[in-house]
Image 1 (tube, helix red, strand yellow):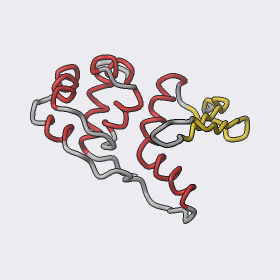
Image 2: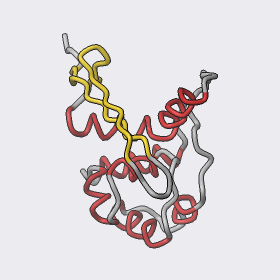
Image 3: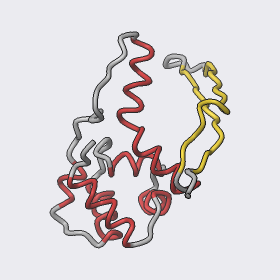
Image 4: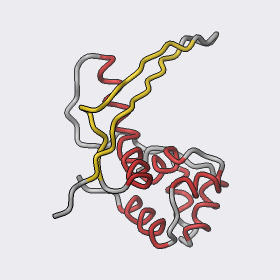
Length: 147
């Protein structure tokens, strides 16, 4: 998969400034996964958020429009499931998969979350505007081995 040039630029600047997604999230009062989603072109920043991020990353102001324009979401290579509920999980991974990967690897290092030593909880959260689905995944972190 080829990353968009804006994503590469943002990730490079973040690395050069030794900033985490959490650092940037704190700067603009957003969650770290949301900031990572923005970097991967899966979220839209307000002009104020874009201005703050551009300043923190020491980038040019012409990027403000790129960060504040609504993106085309779900740009990973498609292998689309047909079941509607499963498709929604696919859609979630399309939008948040790469950002989640980066945040996990920032916290744990280079590796993966096990799907074998793994648990998942699904709960119903009652809401007057419509009940919500709460999904909690817990997988053992497995660092990649060096040899």
